[in-house]
Length: 362
Image (cartoon, rainbow, N blue to C red; front, side, top):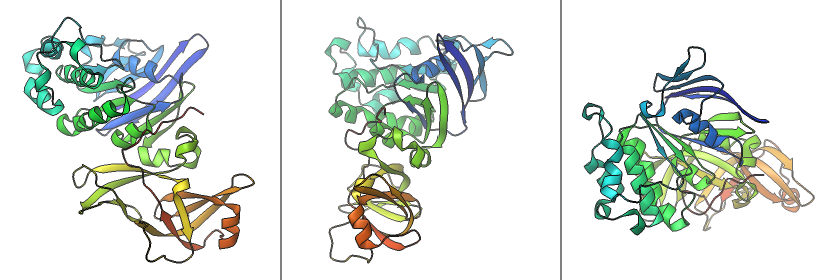
């Protein structure tokens, strides 16, 4: 869906980034402040011109320094949702929604006003002015306005960053529906791990203007060398799962090692979910426990023991994928843990699309 290789110098700072993804869905761009995230999507949008390289979206070349191709922003068929929505203050919600649509030839429109209004739940807002909208409502209208230009690609630059947690929770499900409802790929800039867990199929990790890793979100962020981008409070493992079934009190998630059981989730059977298992929420037992409140007890093999400091060690456990248990040195010695040993992982909690999880700059 996107093939990008660009260079851009701005004073002493240089962007030299390359990545390619060929599947639909949401690709999250993450990295520390000043890494070049917004600059990259601005170049995709055509708001900034790379010094050299190429940008190909859905098989269409938007920029190529070798051939001199540089499609103007208004002809790229790309929707852009900014942090602050940027609604026209003098227009009603209805006229904000249809402003861009009216600039698109009728034959090129594949999304209708009714579809957008129904998807985003904004029918009751159509006559209101932007000054009478909440932050979450403004962002939904901004998303709707971008959709009604019938874009082939969507760019989102931290669209929820100005909202409080309650408003984020209101808007996030609507963003998640976009790719399934309209099959529009999304390039999404965020500092929020919660948003990445909810939305991203793939991730691009930037550092100092360069791509240091890209690929499946769970696989990339689950790697030990990528843990710095989760932040110390979220240190652990990200696991790609799919909803197997719902029972009365639990949702059951299938992953490579079996099933994880979590509180009920409002997603359809088969939906792909990335979960976070924090190292501090994993305990170890030599024997399979019985009569316990733990919902997730999984057979595991000790893969590696990493010395953290004078008090703590990290135990890398293979449960069909890799997770980490952070325990005391005293506990390690008491259990006599060593690589290759068969044990049980007791998982106290699994973070799934809830809470205020931040991708920390460290």
